[in-house]
Image 1 (cartoon, rainbow, N blue to C red):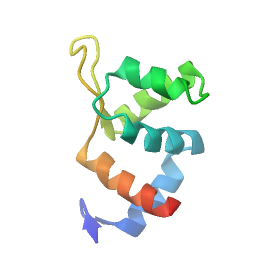
Image 2: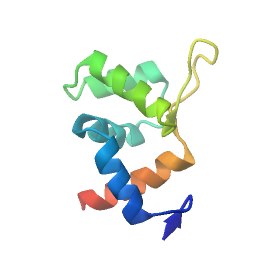
Image 3: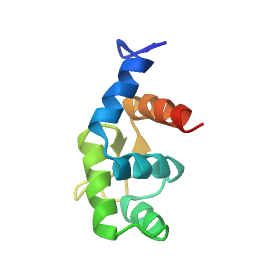
Image 4: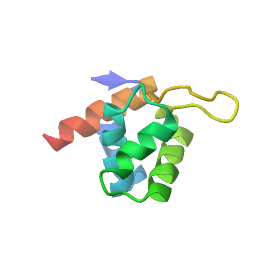
Length: 98
């Protein structure tokens, strides 16, 4: 199947080269937290024994990669959501875990 003009195999290779292990873990965890604000999502991930600074850094990096969206100083309270690209990447990563 082709997504955004790129095959699933090419997406998998890109992800393996682009996301670090911890980023991949937190990306998969954050899918469960869609709809929560950034701060609430961070608190819930921290409860799973991840350092707060790491969680914030990784979520911001995922936002920079245009995989997730959440509020900022201007758009306070905007819930965490996955972009279409993020959803495609999630499908590839989730399939790899099975």
